[in-house]
Image 1 (cartoon, rainbow, N blue to C red):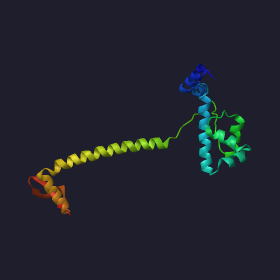
Image 2 (image 1 turned 180 degrees about the vertical axis):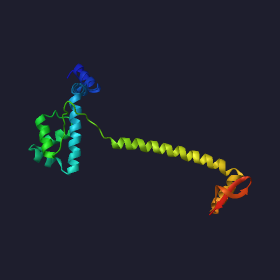
Image 3 (image 1 turned 135 degrees about the vertical axis):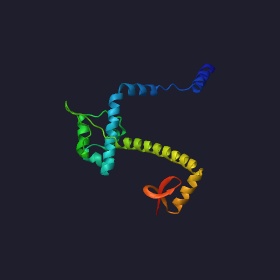
Image 4 (image 1 turned 90 degrees about the vertical axis):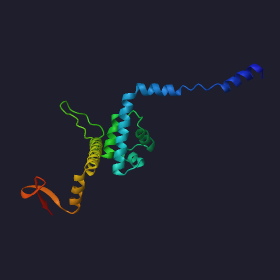
Length: 178
């Protein structure tokens, strides 16, 4: 061995390996973004349906007459599926995976969960605002002498109600009711 070959081997060991595999993966994903997205959506729908029916990949493979490895590839969502494969999936799961709309058909999405969560968030905000307002009003009411009398009469289970025929009390007409 010469010192030149040893030093070049040593430099090779010190330098980071040139791994451009990730660049190839990125280019592949960019070039095939559309069908990869569709494939992953199909995989998610298939997995949801398998969960609903309580079946495993082996059973799905048996129903489709394909190997468990093929089912595994499909469920990863990175397989370029043929119409034949999609048809086998639909038959095996007894469900529709892809629907092609006619010329005058429209898709209406029911996103109840999202709408419910938004309504719940708005309701929570409204409740917080009302509670803060009530706390502020109660603080103002409790600080006045009138409020103390009012609270006392509520505590005694009496309610002051305006009435047309009643005894005169401090220039106003009131009736005390139990």
